[in-house]
Image 1 (tube, rainbow, N blue to C red):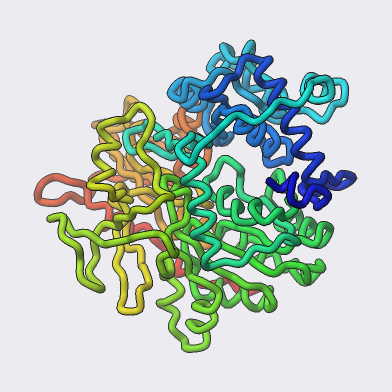
Image 2 (image 1 turned 30 degrees about the horizontal axis):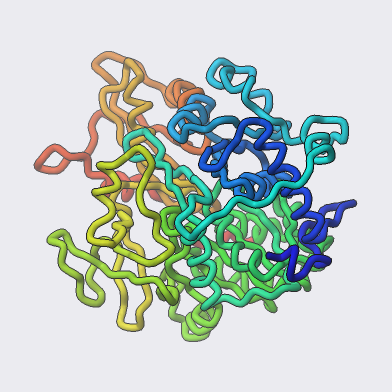
Length: 507
């Protein structure tokens, strides 16, 4: 679409490189041909393991161009977890960049070495030669119900959940977001969170406007601020950890960030102190917060800029902990344990429906039937809606922990720790953390006469789960608090081990 309507407008910006939409589309059509020659066909799936880059975006679009489904994979996972995702998705091949190609030499992914394509900027490498030598291929026909992307999100029983999203889901959410958030053709979008996150889909509203794109391979405050200055970035989506680390660095004033017009932060709210710090550091920037899930492609609600401004002006800091109001075209209700809709202010499970909501997990029919009820998606999150229509999250029914924008399910980590021969029982919780939002902590009981140590248990986890899931602290205790029914009281553990009070440290 952009290649036809704005062919000479910038699509990709990188140091020493600028591609317009017609050039970018031309490369995508040629890469699509190369993918078919590598054995990919319409309806097939393929994995992507790469840092953020315009070439990863090119690979994603090329797969969709030929009717295949990209499966971007969290590169922070352990190799055995990556393999499980590839097998669950029935991927035909994997496309990796040079940062992760060495993983194919290990035993867990060795079988994929003969079925991989290496992303490379080497003009003499296979990737660029395949594009340069291929003829363009016509795009495959697609409908709103055609699978466009398969994302994986953490599983409560140690198994990741495959979330297929259709073109209709993604476009619907772009329109829903667009009803509350302005995007312009001249915008320049910075891609900061890893592109395997559903947060990447929030930028679709900019893609539809033909905005230019800049890709940040790895986040750090200097890299973020430097990219904004160099490429005159106007929009960035950040997880709170990224925004707080940038503010804490004290370096915002060292860069020219005057081009920046909009920031959306998501994955979790920020404390009032951090919001105030963000407004002080970026006084001319429109700032909003979004709440959603991978299954909803992704946003459901938005706490818009004006709501932030009003809350700060009125001293209504509680409002800043809200997820905002529901987007146009999204339905949302709060349901109690009896299946009845809750009254205003009453806590219950958040249900939602709309054209952005997925149709079910791959290979998990029972779970799909559990979460999709009479056309409504049960999010598993607990919350309430106030008199003004603002949604507030209270807890997660499945004890999910959000650390640095990554979802970690406590039961998955507990499963691993319980495999240790000297662990009698363990509970994993998330506690508030100044920078990462939440920190993973384990509380373990040793078997009789066993001698457990924190470092030993952390080392035990290293090759079994992704690094971000490994507890930052493991406390060895004689007993765990239990209810009358013998259930571990994680609420009591959170009270005991939570220390962070949410304030911004003084410099």
